[in-house]
Structure formats: structure tokens, C-alpha cells
Length: 308
Ligand SMILES: CC(C)(COP(=O)(O)OP(=O)(O)OC[C@H]1O[C@@H](n2cnc3c(N)ncnc32)[C@H](O)[C@@H]1OP(=O)(O)O)[C@@H](O)C(=O)NCCC(=O)NCCSC(=O)CC(=O)O
Image (cartoon, rainbow, N blue to C red; front, side, top):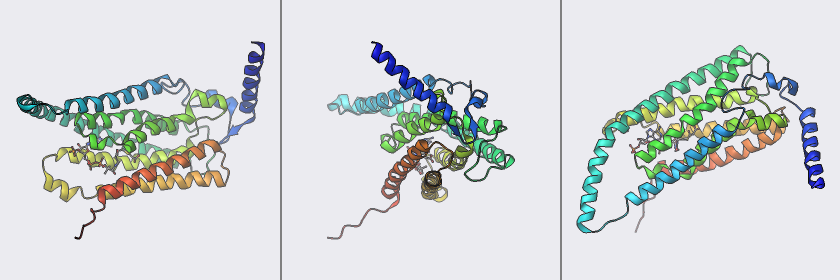
């Protein structure tokens, strides 16, 4: 008993020493208590984020299971009846769901614009350059937008719920679920109490650029989804005006590449940003690039002609 107590104390003390010895991005830790995101909901405690993630995963697994059970083949007349019933339900659901999809996409387009504009304006006012910035005490407005950005990732969980309600199982891919879960974790990680304790604190100078980039991409992405839902039965219009879906995917890949270069820059030039977070970011961006490249080649490359 005594030994384990001593061991805990030793670990605790070395963590404290580590904590006291580090200064990241120019913010001495004694100032951490005064950081702008301190005390905000879902920042000081990891419980809300973990609960949301658990609820999200529960909905995804449950939703996929329910669709599978609903699609199970039945016999003879039972099957015909079930199919007719399903058809009726689908038509009724269709219009209500369409309004939800339109509202969600319109909201996310506006929110993304608000964040992109706010982040870029704050960066301009603070005279932050693209990277390698030191934290400035007066970055309150920037912290506000980063916080909104983090909360917006929870709103984006609705994307998957929409896919499930539409029974679009083809869209609920590993890429999609992995992206939604991991992004929420990666964005909050440098800002939670856990990382505060170790000395990793709210450091917006290094985050704002990827948040702004992502918000810009999302303005177009949600606009695309919005228009798609608006013209849901008009194939001609979709083909004529939404041909740029392909460029949107390219834009997403460019975004991940820029983030990857930023992480490499931070590692090579030993930026004051916590090195282990840079390494996580680098690996993460590589994984997203691979998954999106795979998605891109499957979706846009024409199938190979077979010559006999
Ligand atoms: C062009 C893309 C934006 C989307 O490609 P998709 O193949 O998913 O979509 P699609 O061309 O079939 O789009 C039309 C279908 O999406 C449905 N749809 C409408 N609104 C939606 C919403 N908010 N979320 C998810 N799906 C939605 C429509 O009803 C329609 O279904 P129907 O066909 O039934 O009418 C692509 O670049 C992409 O992101 N692919 C990855 C898949 C993904 O999960 N993306 C979103 C998160 S990734 C992300 O956000 C990356 C980032 O950070 O930048």
C-alpha cells in the first residue's frame, strides 16, 4: 500500500515539475487560469464531449442496425405488404426530412462563413502571420471563434443522422465516422483541463489557420449539400450546376495537405507548439489524405472499360 502511494506521489510530482517547467507558445502557465476559454461549457470538463461522442456512436451503430433489420428479406405476400408500407412511410418522411436537411445545411453554411470571417479578421487585427506566431494576451475574440468552431463540430454530427434517416448507408463510411469523431477530439485536446494540467493550453496562433481553412471549405461543402437537397428531384440541374463536387473534394485534400505541411514545419523548426501534438496532427492529416484519396478515386474516376 505504502509503495503504491509513494509511486503515485512520485508520478504526481514529476508531472507537476514538468508542468512548472514548460512555457508553450509564449504563455507562461501561471497565466493559464486567465485564458479566455477557461470555464466555458465543454472545455473545463471532458464529460460533455465524451457524452456527445458516446451518444453519436450509439446512434450510428443503432441506426445502421435498424436499417439492416428493416431491409431483411421477407416471404411472399408479407414481403409485398411490407414493401408497400415502406414506400408510403418513405414518401411521408421525405418532405419533413427535406426541410431538416435544408435547414441544417443553410445553418452550417452561415455558421462556417461566420467562423471563417471572424477568424481571419481576428488574425489580421492581431497581426498574426500564417504560422510560427507567439500567443498574444489580447486574443479574446480569436479564442471565441475557436470555441465556436469546436462546438460546431458537434452540430456536424447531424450530418450522419441525416444520412441514416435517409437510409443512405453508402455515405456512412469509415472515412465519414472516423472524420467526425476524430475532428471533435483533435480540436478540443489542446484546450481541455487534462492538457492544461500538463501545460498544454489554449494556443490559437497555431490553430486559427486550420480552423479558418476548414471553415472556408465548409462554406462550399454545406452550400453543395444545400443545393443538392433543394434540387433533389431535378437531376438535370444537379448535373449542370453541381459539377464542382469534384473540385470540392480536391479542395478538401488541399486543406489536409496544408495542415500537414504546417505540422511538418512545426516539427522541423521546433515551434513552441507542443511537439507531441504536432506529431499527432501530422499522422492524422496523412490518414485523412489517404482516406479522401481513396474516396476520390472511387467516386470520380470512370470505371475501367473491359475489352473482350
Ligand atoms: C462532395 C463531398 C462534399 C460529398 O460527397 P458525398 O459522396 O458524400 O455526397 P454526394 O455527392 O452523394 O451528395 C449528395 C447526398 O448527400 C446528402 N446530404 C445532404 N446534406 C447532407 C449533409 N449535411 N451531410 C451528409 N449528407 C448530406 C444528400 O441528401 C444526397 O443524398 P441523396 O444521394 O440520397 O440525394 C465530398 O467531397 C466529401 O466530403 N466526401 C467525403 C464524405 C463525407 O462524409 N463528407 C462530409 C464530411 S468530411 C469533411 O467535412 C472534410 C473536411 O473537413 O473538409
